[in-house]
Image 1 (cartoon, rainbow, N blue to C red):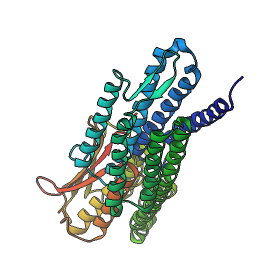
Image 2: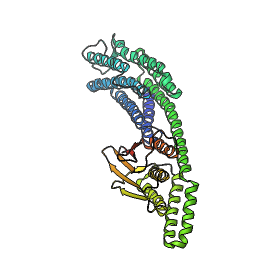
Image 3: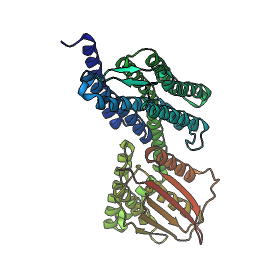
Image 4: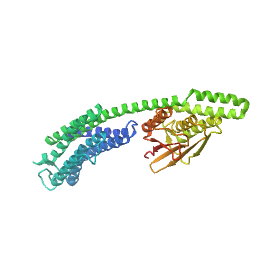
Length: 423
């Protein structure tokens, strides 16, 4: 008959398996987590999942004398998983504080202690001093068992001290989340040193890992919402700059005069202007990246309206073989409009604008060149406000960049770089 302790172990283990599997799926799908954090938490809970599976296997075979050799391997596996879990918090802490793992004295110290633990584990396989199993497959701790866990306890103490030392670099929720996990891990290691309650220990660690994740995902969600509000604000700011009353007025007046002089051209300009307005209004409502072809169509519609008014002064060329990528809405069109506005306002000479796209191994690039009078990077005028808005939206929405530089031979060159997302 199954002992009541086995029922408790199976119940806790089953609950843990479900929690870890659900957690891994949740982490993979959450949009608020950045790529590094997703990988971290998937790794952390995968380790916990494997730890629970190893303990389940231990529970199933520990009464079978024929499985003594397998049981010994399972013991080693459990200790290894447990020890690696003590290393995980330091990785999150250093990443969150923007500290290099390679140059961290703290990380090197923790790894050195972990190596000492591994050496003691190796030593334990050749002596009964640390732990041993008898022929009946029963596991016993030796007189030196405490030595095995001392390096892990020191690791946890160093982790806790490191969190307190860096508390100013951490948000309140990251600080609390890490401490909850670390204190629980420390208590778990001490309990494991004194009494054999393995499944209860790992259950407590898993619950506190979920608690830590709850604090951290809450912090990430708040940051994500702030970014979304900032994106919306930047998009609205760009739209205020884009929908210039005098541009609309001039376009409508131009169409008015064309109705008598060239009705066919008036119809075409009306169609182009309608397309331009439609794209602008669509961009206001868009909260996601859009195909570059949509942005290109928007830009062509805007230029068609401008060229109807400045047909002898505005010349545009497109070299865009690479279009299979996505951009934040209102990326290319405002850049081209800035080139037109700045060039037309400063000089009566014709202005030539080129739009080029290309693909590199790591990114998609958009390059807009013009031969206008150019402008200084320190100017605080409307064109630069618009470019700064585009730059911020690129950073927030896709990790992209925008660079403005003087063009060789006169004029300005603007380059947008959009990283190719991982598949």
